[in-house]
Image 1 (cartoon, rainbow, N blue to C red):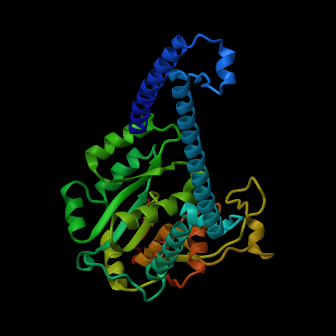
Image 2 (cartoon, rainbow, N blue to C red):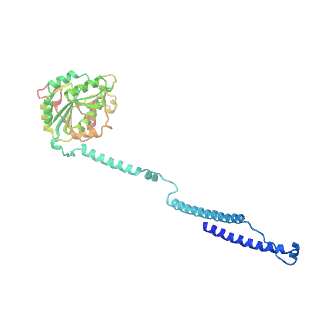
Image 3 (cartoon, rainbow, N blue to C red):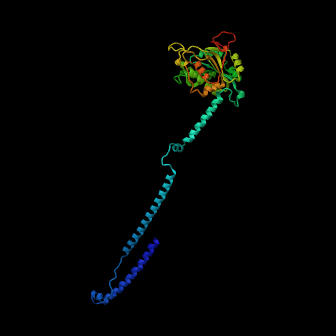
Amino acid sequence: LATIVTEFIQNLDKFQLKSRTVNAQNLNVWKMDTLPTTSTAKRGGRSKVPQTSKPSLLLAFCSCVAWLYVAGRLWQDAENRNLLASLLKKNSAQRPKVLTVEDKLVVLGCRDLEKRIVETEMELTLAKSQGYLKGQRQQTASSDRRLLAVIGVYTGFGSHLKRNVFRGSWMPRGDALKKLEERGVVIRFVLGRSPNRGDSLDRNIDNENRSTKDFLILENHEEAQEELPKKAKIFFSTAVKNWDADFYVKVDDSIDIDLEGLIKLLEHRRGQDGAYIGCMKSGDVISEEGKPWYEPDWWKFGDEKSYFRHASGSLVILSKNLAQYININSVSLKTYAYDDTSIGSWMMGIQSTYIDDSRLCCGSTTQDMLCSLA
């Protein structure tokens, strides 16, 4: 554009120079001619040449250039619009007009999440089958060092004197407790937390535990008489997660134990999957509210109102795979008014082996008893 303007200006200068020469010649002719202007016209003489100014020509040229620029931009914009229209048409042909739910799930990545959920459910099903079905004992790298039993002694906040009596009788303390663990038997007092978390009751138990180191404190359990069935679930679940043992034993703090006799019984039963051991009993279901041993769910036990067979709550022994079953299914397991009937209901729906051992009927007074009332 600059080159064209330069050439135009040079041509314009030449044109103006030529115009000046012609004008000078015309001026000389005019001076020599004395006749009126009309006479020259009569003679067919020369007419006056019109003069064109330089700014007018420059303005005309600029107008042409501007017109060419605007036309070029309009053409370029038209090309861009055609290109965008073709791309939009191509993309719209590839995408569905209505986005389905499946497409939205793909966009959000929910299909991958669904796949992971299905895989997790399959793994959980496999874990359940290996964890509690009879004959499906899990083999672990530490099976050679597996404990014989974990014994949990139920206790309460106000049972400090009872605990001291146990520590001085059948339950070892200090170094003797550690030596017993080397034999494969772990004993712990089992206790939840106070309803007023962190109060003096909790602090006293923490101080006692720091001194004796013989507590299993259930952090997720609130200690209360009506919460004993839930305490059973949490105890077996916590014990099976903390220790790898063949048996898990629940003991009330109202009985004394022949510890060596109990160890011999467990060694004799060692390797028996699905073992549910205790003093098996049944009994009437109390349906009158306000009476001792009242069962709110009495109507579920039929017209005869009789409990199913279950181990007495004073001493209950479960093999490892049964304790694993409770741990895996603790959220969905139904609890009744008492812990022994609750445990018995959990054992009814799986392949458990009921072992009724009269030596574990702690109310009896025979000489071969393994437990007795404290």
